[in-house]
Amino acid sequence: MKQTLQLKLSQQLTLTPQLQQSIRLLQLSTLELNQELETFLMENPLLERDDADSEQPPPVPPNGAEREEYAASAEEAPVNDTTAPEAADIDWFADAPSGAARREDGEESEYPQLAASTPTLSEHLMEQLCLTQLSERDKSLVNTLIAALDEGGYLSQSLEEIAAMLPPQLEVELDELQIALHHLQSFEPTGVGARTPAECLELQLKALSAEVPARELAITIVHKHLEALAAHDYARLKRQLHCDDESLREAQHLIQSLNPHPGAEYSTNETRYIVPDVVVKKVKNAWVASLNPDAMPKLRINRMYANILQDKQHSASGQMSSQLQEARWLIKNVQQRFETILRVSQAIVERQRHFLDHGEVAMRPLVLREIAETLSLHESTVSRVTTQKFMATPRGIFELKYFFGSHVATETGGACSATAIRALLKQIVDAEDGKKPLSDSEIARILGEQGIVVARRTIAKYRESLNIPPVSLRKLL
Image (cartoon, rainbow, N blue to C red; front, side, top):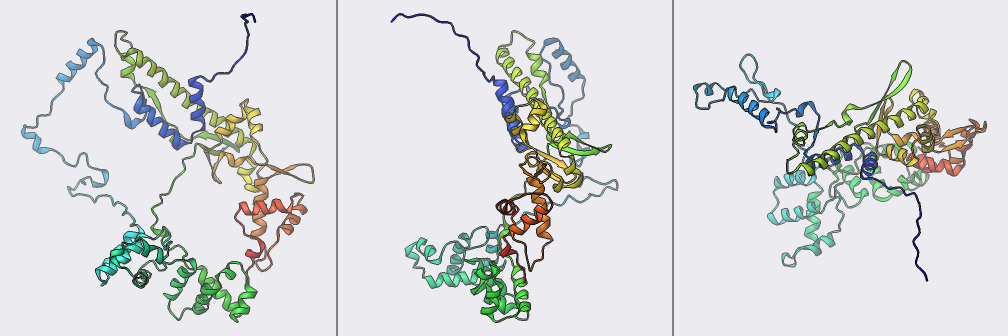
């Protein structure tokens, strides 16, 4: 077989490093972007933040002439002599925090109060354990049970399992653990150390005064009939408990006032706050989107290192030139990221202005392709922009993806967004008679009378997404 050479022309799309970085920055959230930028700031000395608080005195310039001028000016500046008598007149409050500064009358103002840290559930229980008159062995057993509690204050392991985990030489009997559990369940918060939700509620009910109305009936319900109460099977409860509607209603309200998670208040979970990328305001009867300055990092090129690159004989000029180019790319890509977010946000605002005026019931159907075609962007780019990016509006803070949704046809040939249907569904359920709640079929019929054709299974899906229980669980006494 004879070998030949052939020339073939073809087109191939190659992602440059700059384009790859641009795509990556676009899909990051604001928090992830700041974390990414911190990495770049640590690795690239030519990149720095352009914040007012980060202004530093100008460093010594690299070239010789300016360095001599800088040194001369430094020699003329007065130097602090710590051995001079004037050193005894130092104002020790000059650099103190504003809350601890000295007032004009010479007296010290109070330091700002710092928020006390909330103790954990284990710490709170250990403090109570130390105040008891129990023996050291009993305290050790109670301490073992405290260590086995979960975040809600429940004892997730059985006493048999805990006994099996203890060293055999301790010879711990199951009765001893039962007594230790009794001591633990007497601690605050009431209900801690329970093994089931029913036991947790029963402990709280038994801690109430015997004069509390419906207390004994409530104890019987949580002890034997909690599942029937959860299923709203009131007919069965009245038949088995031999009580009337009023007594059962009082017992139900008493049970609902209890805390099924007594240890939740001592949880160490921190609240996470959302910093919106875009702020929407009404200006001259028109909704306008603008970037949030607090979410925009301010970056710039370090002037000192940029001046060093002017010296062609510098040994590190090659590496620093590469870092300078990377810093310029990053600044440009960050700026382009926010410009794209603003363009997409303004396009969303223009199409969802009725939502901003009237709420969820006025949300119109919107898909990513519509925004992409309007802005001449790829649909994947719009998807990246709308993920984990948030918009602050007078109606609340929403992720940009919130404004997109499927549609349902109406009898007039139009379309209604799924968000608007969910809002109507919630309004219908909120207005229903609790003693005769509406089924999914009845809700579909009501929407059909308003010209919105929705199947019963679609209503069920939307109801579940709104965490609205089915008709049997919405029935009230």
